[in-house]
Amino acid sequence: MTVIEKIESQLSSHAILLYMKGTPYFPQCGFSGKVVQILQECEAEFAYVNIFEDPEVFQSLPDFADWPTFPQIYFNSELVGGGDIIVEMAEQDTLKAAMEEAVEKYNG
Image (cartoon, rainbow, N blue to C red; front, side):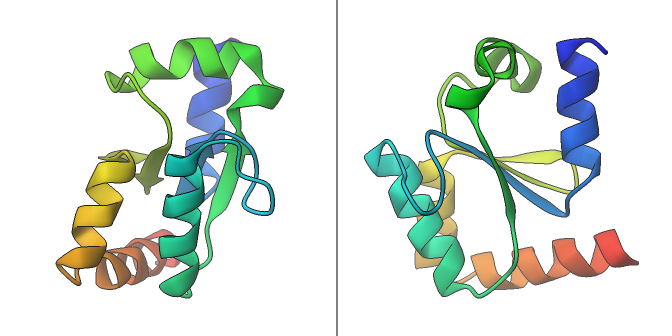
C-alpha cells in the first residue's frame, strides 16, 4: 500500500479525522491541543492520527492536501482546514452543526 492509499484509507474510515501532533490525551503542539479542546466541547466523535507515529504520512499529507501545516481536519474525506479554520468555525457557532452533518452523512 502506498502512503497515498494509506491516507485515503484512513480518511474513508472515519466521518471526522484529525491529523495532529500527538494525541488528544497528550497533544504535542498548542494548535493541536486547541483543536482537540474545541472538538471535545462539540461532543462529536472524531478519530485522530498522530503524525509523529507515521513519518510517511507526516511528510506526504501536506502535498496530498495542499495544506502545509498541522493539525488538519477532514469531514467525510474532505479537508476542512487547520486549527485556524476550526477556531473560526467554533467562534461563528457553525462547527458543531457541521460535525453532526458529517457524521449523519457518513452513517447515511
